[in-house]
Length: 394
Image (cartoon, rainbow, N blue to C red; front, side, top):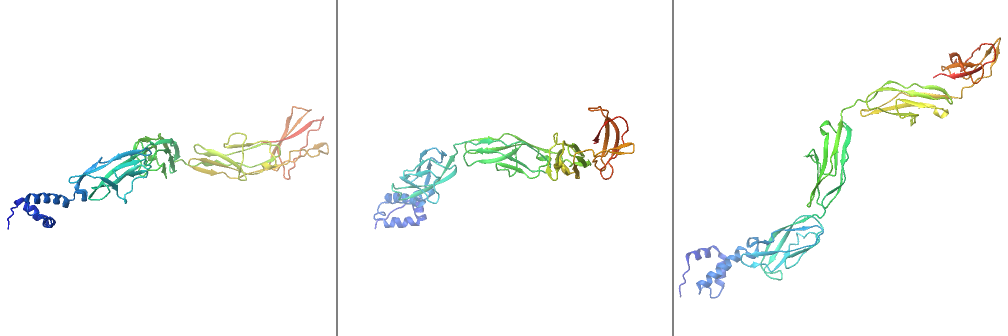
C-alpha cells in the first residue's frame, strides 16, 4: 500500500472537523491526491462555517440601510454578498416581518412602491444562492426609515389666560402634519412633565405655574413651535362682604324707585333679580338698581348677587309693593275747614302742596306721614280758592 504524507497543520485542522472526515472518506479518489484532499477540505470548512447558511457567512447588504418619503414613490436594489458564494442571485423577505404598506420586494432584491406610513422599520432580507429562491441562504436586517412628507404646522395658537389661584388652566393648540408626530409642552423653554398632548391642563393653578407656555411639534421633516401663551395666576382674593343691605319700598303705580347696596371687595360685579329673575336697570349693573314708572308687575322680592374672583355673596331680600296711583278722595267740609284725604300708604311720607292757580307755582303746605289705614287728613287754610296736590316723598 502506498503511504500518504499529510502536513501537520492540515492534519490538525482535519481532526478538528469530524464531519469533514466523513466527506473525505466518501469521496472516491480523495486519498490518492493530497492536493485534491486539501482543496476539498478548504471548501468543506467554508461550508460548515456557514457561508450562505446563516448570518455569519454574509459580509453585509448593499446598501446597508434605506430611506424613503411617505407618499413618494421609491426604488432601491439590495444585494447580499457572501465570502464563499459571492453575491446572492435571488431575494425574499421573511413573512413574519411584513414590509411597510405600499412597498414590495422583487426576487431581484428591488424594494419599490409608494409607502403610506411613516416610521422606522426593519426588513428581514434573505439572499439565496440560486436564482429561484433556493440553495444556501443568508439573512440580514436592513433598516428602513420612511420620513414624513408634511412638516408640522400649528393651525390654532394657544390663548393666554388669567385665573385665580386654585382654578384650573387649559391651553390648547391645533395642528397638522404627518405622523409620527411628537408633542411636548414647554414652560419658558423647560419641558413640562407628562405634557405630551395637544391640550395642557393644570388642575389647580398656583403662583409657580404663572409664565409663558408653548407647544413643540416634531416629525421626520421638521420641528415647529406654537406661539407663546401667558398664564397669569392672580393672588387669592377675598369674596365680597355686604355692609349695607337694600331696603324695600311701598310705591304707587307710576312712581320710580331705587335700591342700593354697599359691599367691600375688589373688582365687584352686580346682578339684581326680582323673585329669582334677572332684572335690568336704568344704568349699567352696579350697586344701585333704578326702576322708573313702575306698574304692578314691578312688585316682588329683590336681591343682588355681588361677585369677584374670590366668590360671591347674595344680599337680603328687599320687598317692593305697588299700590294704585296716588289720588285724592272727595273733599269734605268740617265746620269752617276743608278736609282733604288721599289713598296714602301706611308709613309713607307725603308733601301737601298748594298754589293760587294753575300752573302754579306750588308751595309746600305740610309734610306728613300716612296714618294707619292709608288715609291722610289735612285742614287747609280757609280763604280764597286754591289748588292742592299731594306728592309722595322718597
